Length: 331
Image (cartoon, rainbow, N blue to C red; front, side, top):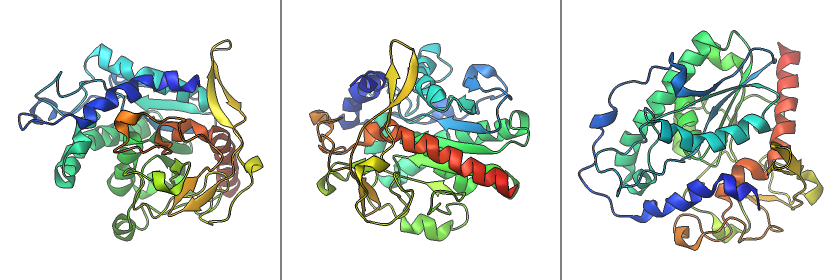
């Protein structure tokens, strides 16, 4: 599958996740802020020709591992080669969401080994990356947005940082401009939802504003750590929390890179779907689709985490159009 080449780096470096970590790692190297007035720290600053914006945050792509770096848990985006590691993913998504002005900052994301740490340590480390995304978003709102409606869009660690932004970084006026927050490949717990009921208000149908989360597997035994305990996930073929089995024709196709056209196309990928514990089950897809045996501890066979950001590409693109139309009609 050609899409896998775009994500090969992310898949290959996941082996570092299972490497033992040292107490020598610190956050000393990353205590300063990133200056988002410097376009060096933006993959794309968008344009102003389209009716709405996408503020996009990429997933974990850094190839830094413990073996390479014993002083920091974070990707050093002051280095050109580190920024380059994110470009394939961002380029793919800029093509996929080409109907909108595309804004995509680089950020000091956590390396994979951070996710091996106990929850209190991981939460502390996540604040560095979350601060960068908050700073980038605030700069975007002050200097680029110009009052246009916008979508938040992320995958995996990118979605994690957008959820932190929703909880802690957005004003009421900013929320009014947000059409939807597609936080793909992550989760919101019952405790978080209870603590931040307005900030994390889920969009429970195909038209309303709010938070949209989905994770997918081929069978219920493949639900992994990333989505376990989620209480807001929807089925992206219906954008609802109903558990009915949905016919394959409701799947509008996956996003796939086309070499010949140097573009992203929506191609057929028929599968029935149903929701189980807020995870979308796709029983007609091959469980080997994105399975790597070395990573089975976190992503068991049948877990489609690495495909989530493009597997429902046709549904996401069409749903964005629907939500934006409804938003503009109400404005």
